Amino acid sequence: MPEEVPGELAQAVYDTLSYSDVFDFPLKAREIYRYLSGKAATPEDLDRVLSSDPRFVRDGEYFALPGRGEIMRLREKREQRSQELLPYAFAYGRMIGALPFVRMVALTGSLAVHNLAGDEDFDYMLVTQAGHLWTARAFVLLLGRVTRLVGHTLCPNVVVAENHLEWSQHDLYSARELCQMIPIVGMGVYQSLMKANAWVRDLLPNAYREAILAPAQQKSGQILHRLFEFPFQGRLGKRFERWEMNRKIERFSRQAGFGEETIFNASICQGNFDHHRKWTRQELEKRGVRLNKEESGRERRPETRRA
Image (tube, rainbow, N blue to C red):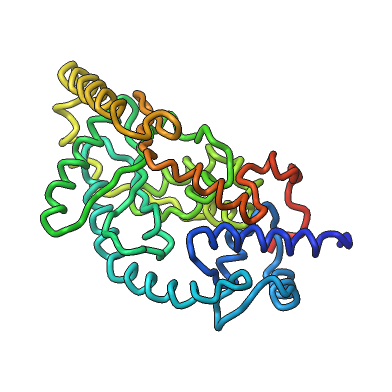
């Protein structure tokens, strides 16, 4: 093994911990291995770096950057709250998966990584049948009106059509979002999503390999699912799809934060009005980590042996 590799691996660990530090989230060794930025390594190599580099502070099973010991206890509180809400998130995800034109449902956001800070929003990424994205989203919002009666908000933050699976932004933020999501319904579509975003393996080789090996399963209840979709398959359904898309985009265009990190068209509905990518980039740059691999000057593919 080249002499520079251990130093590169230590830097990759630092970048990985820095990313999670932005969200006040210390990591376990297994999580560092999974989300190791820009390198593939064996667990044994990783253990040697974690035990020898003074930049990495350990408290029990958690690792963090120096001076960030307080987030160890914070994670325990957030993880406990997340575990309480995960059964609801999975149940709602299965309900969403039974709605017309929904082909995949995955839990995203802070709840997916067990880092819920206090609110009870359930963030999801959806893949829908092409030509019916806004109709599917309308059904999800209708379900959300019911869940709000018990204090739970459903947020379909990213919705894409099944013929538009590759993400336009090829950066660490997008790679982490893809690899952190928890698929609930439509494992076959989830695998297609990950294969369409093979660029992720250059940024998160370990996480991408684990995701692409997830077992594919067929979605159950397809006959009943298609029966509910039948009334919207004809001319009337197309008119409703156009009407729903146009009125929603017109409303979104008046909302603060529109344009910079939002995408709305027939194949994508991505409503990042709060500019999370920009904020994450700024926080990473404060820690000496850049969001894009091209900016960091580390264009190489993983060099260490795979586990």
